[in-house]
Image 1 (cartoon, rainbow, N blue to C red):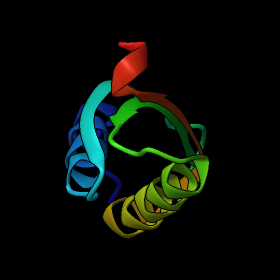
Image 2 (tube, helix red, strand yellow):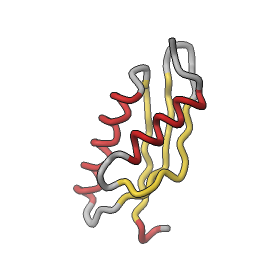
Image 3 (cartoon, rainbow, N blue to C red):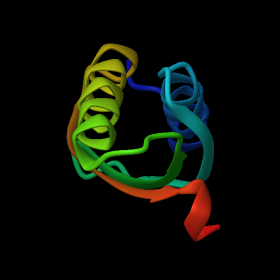
Length: 84
């Protein structure tokens, strides 16, 4: 049984916020397409280099895959605290 889109969004937010370096989730969107769950999120990160930011985004993808096993494609757009 798959979770509703609303529940999946809550799980995605929780998974993203649990990643060290992500300070907020500004937007998370998910949509069921058959048995696939694509989505996207805009997150604020606390990183001083692009290498550190890339590592945080990699960790976020890993956390999402564990929280939402049916996740297909997920785009994470990052912004630093300075951009906010």
